Length: 638
Image (cartoon, rainbow, N blue to C red; front, side):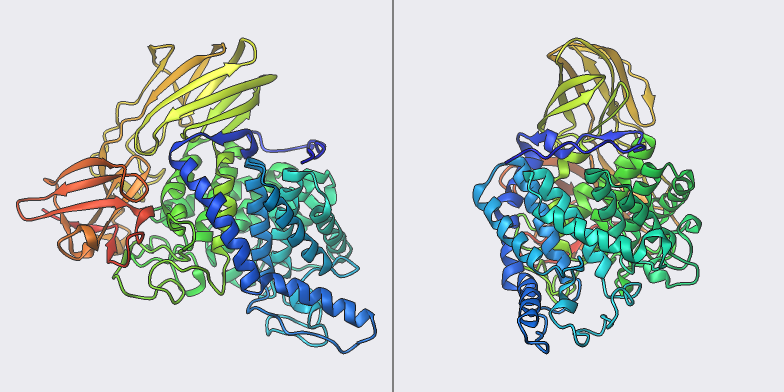
């Protein structure tokens, strides 16, 4: 595959720069197993689902309608093969995830399959650049109540025309960067040219009903250097409010929003898009707004598992401290929250954003996919009765959904997870995530190879080997997670019953060092030479967690954590229904490594008095052994 040309650097950007996932590969352990299942099972499974469910057929029907009309059948049109006008976006997300997989490992068969998919997408684009299969295949009258005879008119409500394009642009950029091929990127460019004609210069004010176009335009700007695409992202943000629906965050202008409200996926995509525009344009107002929004979301509306969007009705953020056990916590909302938190870190260099990202990553995100890679959760509750069809009509994980936004989102995020591992700023190299891996990081005017050896998240021992091409003076900033310092989250929303910080330590070259802690990072400044070794030890005591007294639903309840992993109890491992279990302060809890269980996990063996014994498993792994009741929050005993 050809390497794409390097785009011109933006005039402004994030102060902290991420190291792209293509520069880091996992070499074993937790994330290697997840990425291999994603690559070998979930990617081909998702591509086949796009075929079998008719999502790709919609592009064929749109192309055929244009051909036959041009050939003299003016009345020819076809009904969509699927249910929703946003079904196009699932194809784009799967292409994006598959392109990420190609970036990690060449696969000629997958490469050819993507080329064929992209040809079908390109054939459905109208001559002026418009791409939206639900209109193109059935142009004489709307084929769905969400679609208006006029383009864009119902996008502030539910047509999803711009939402689809946001995911298209992300896919086009990903495929170009993975392969150097331009066909899908050219489709994106023609589409963006149409948007500029229709919306550029603020000739028309329209707020996208489902945000993500802002993120796609920012990526398109980065890869092409065309400033119009960044301006369009700003135009769509500035079109929001006042007086529109809270559901889609159109109630206020973006710079006036201070509370996370409405549909959680829409909200988090918007906040991530605001961060991109703030970084690329130097808009300090948006940064101040984002801090206030984050304080609200992370301080009052975050599930212990890192999920957000507690309400099933509207898939929405609830009121402050409205965090029920049957919370909705959509998988897509967790992914979007990770995207937003990463951007907040890039804006500020502050570790607590990565702390929240890690909490979501190891709990409320990966819970969305079964260990087999072919079954999925849309919502991620913290308690389950073992029978209810809570998962969009399914009891337990489902093979796919009519509204299938979550599985493709899992595909692309899992494939690119190593993009969260490292970042650089001037002479500093940030180590944000711990995993057996190797990466090449551009920092301090040269390249540094960083190798990690660790069994994280089951062990807090991390061995970092730092190898610059030549002796180099730089600052290594190693994140010391909040959980090891006695704080589960960077707010008072949750706390540990025993909050004494664990005695973490650092050794360089075998010698203990007392590294200062700045913004959540242990700071090591020195001249580094090839083969220098840093040993990090993050003790992982089992912690009992309680919620703020403001969270009425969790009064009298406690949960168990070890390291970044939140635990739950399933019916298979408990003598009584998990929600009825009592955990007293005298309970003995022992961490037990079980290589043969659930893909290899550390469980918690709990003995609470002579009559009560049960086992807790990582929350992300629940419902991998069949249907059973489950609970994260247990009754507090005396």
